[in-house]
Length: 111
Image (cartoon, rainbow, N blue to C red; front, side, top):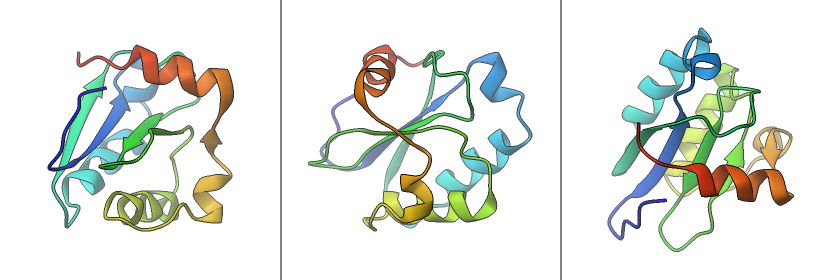
């Protein structure tokens, strides 16, 4: 994942399965409207296939992987997380951990 000292980096899976979901455009628009500097990367497939899949790396934090970011409230919580808020219970329920998260993080490359 790109190192950025000034902004949060958010990688959004840009594979066909994630990109064609109706929530994909709403998600990228919500992230683009965040009140803090955020670099949104359209990444290649993150190999989770339960999309949209998002990896958030705030400055000085480890990357956090989320799958099925589909609901309006999930998008709102994700934007708040990008702005420095906590990982809410709603986001915790869609968080990916372990080897699956590590593989997704390793696959992040801009398209």
